[in-house]
Image (cartoon, rainbow, N blue to C red; front, side, top):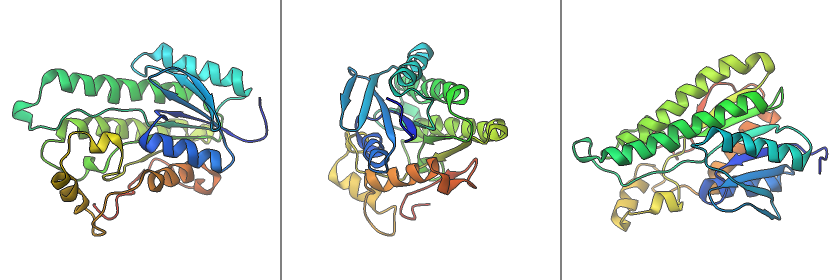
Length: 236
């Protein structure tokens, strides 16, 4: 199936920002492999594989499957898969919820980033999706933001480690974006409060973030390394 078009693997590509990334890369002429927690499928935007990022072997299998299906290693890998849990103050935050965040957002991201470091092409790109909440403290979001801060630390170290192979490693840290993950459990009043974080007084769109991700994966971002780019409408 290999052609001259580059291959991108998007972990967490079934909805929200990930689904927008799948469309954005496909529209730009990339061959797209993506993952979800449900069954694998083939569609107009490439191939989808089932993966549990908490399991390093499951992550490695995605790279093996994509190599077999596309006939080449990925030019770019997008580490987007992640979860959130109900927000709450530290005094009442459930330990089991925090453990769940750690297992997916930290251990899972580690598995994806580590395998990407081994498998992405020389001169390629790795992009992790984090959150502007790492730098804009909001009550109740500390545990979630902490897991994404950990990912940003991995990204910055990897950028130094992989520069010898000309592999660029960056993160995209959006503000509030209109996705299922963002909307879950929020009242309209809560959404309006978060829209007010931006001087534009609105929530971002998934495609606005996906375009930044695609840029960082492209040759147009050849001089961008180890950065945390924040498409958040001026939130911070």
